[in-house]
Image (cartoon, helix red, strand yellow):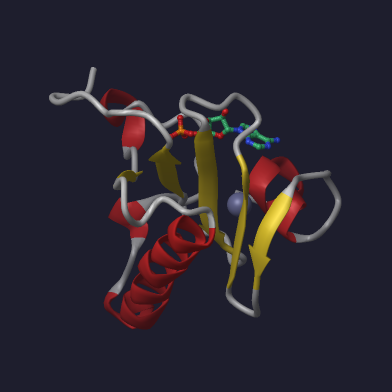
Length: 116
Ligand code: AMP
Ligand code: ZN
């Protein structure tokens, strides 16, 4: 998918506004536009890849980095002691609506299991 057609590529390139809470050379984290919990942050790679399912062996370091960014953002937002959820939806039945890999960090309320 060309980056101009991808909403998260456009956020990563600064072409669309977002409330950014973390930025580095490989990743970004910003507030979800339609939060499903008091704290709802999305962590994305700057480089376009579709989902967890499109990750390759060479993305091992990037995948680990995204998880560490999720944990760091959760810690910075005071979610460590109460707990939180990190979710990656994959594909249609996984409930993915934006085809650019992202981790949801959800917190500030009790989560239910199983998810819907
Ligand atoms: P998913 O359904 O797992 O693909 O998650 C996509 C998420 O992106 C949803 O929670 C949306 O609310 C969120 N979202 C879509 N567009 C934007 C945007 N421009 N800025 C922030 N969050 C967005
Ligand atoms: Zn993209």
